[in-house]
Structures are given as structure tokens and as C-alpha cells.
Image (tube, rainbow, N blue to C red; front, side, top):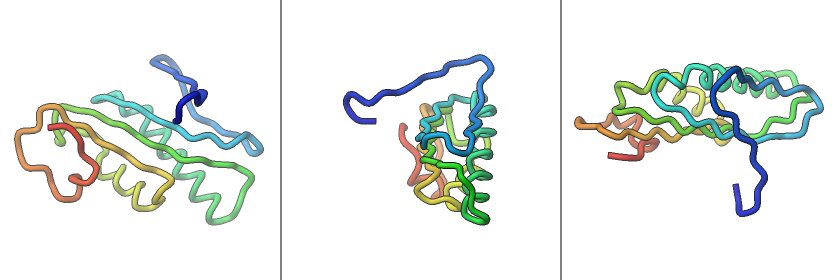
Length: 119
């Protein structure tokens, strides 16, 4: 976002992302902590499916980018991290993630290091 950008926020409750063909392009920012990743991971998988379908067969969906910010105490508590890294590799620039750890005491593996902020 930039200064004066319009954003919509949704916190808790029942929510989903189901863009329809012909809808305007949207960029998503998904923010999760701990096990709160579950519904957002489903949204990421849906976005990946739509991107894959769009690239493979072509469709009328106008997909923007999806950026996930995901925080946990340490990297062992980051659920789906390998799956998320796989989505980022499969759809570079379209799906990105920044992991944040608050109480990491051990060395962070090389695969995660470029995507980790915090201690």
C-alpha cells in the first residue's frame, strides 16, 4: 500500500476469498499468527490453484499478488512453512511470505533465512 491507498480489513469470523471471472484485480495481504494460519493457508492454496489454472488454460480471473505475514514463537511453530515456500517457488512474485519469529533460540535453516524477520 502507499499513502492514501484504500484497504479493506477482515478480522476473525467466517471469511473466504472467492474471486469471480470479471472481478477487478485485487492484491491480498494476509496476516496470521500461530495456528491462525489455517484459513489463510487455504486461501493461499486457492490462489495458487487459480494462478495455475490461469497459466495453464487461460481464464478470465484477474489475479493480483498475495503477501503473507506469518508470526510464531520460533520456526518449529510455523505451520505449513515448507508448503508456503513451495508456493512461493511455484509462483514467484505472485505469492510471497515474510515469516516473523519472536523467540527463536536456535539457528534458522538456510531455506527459511531469507524470509525470516525478528530474533
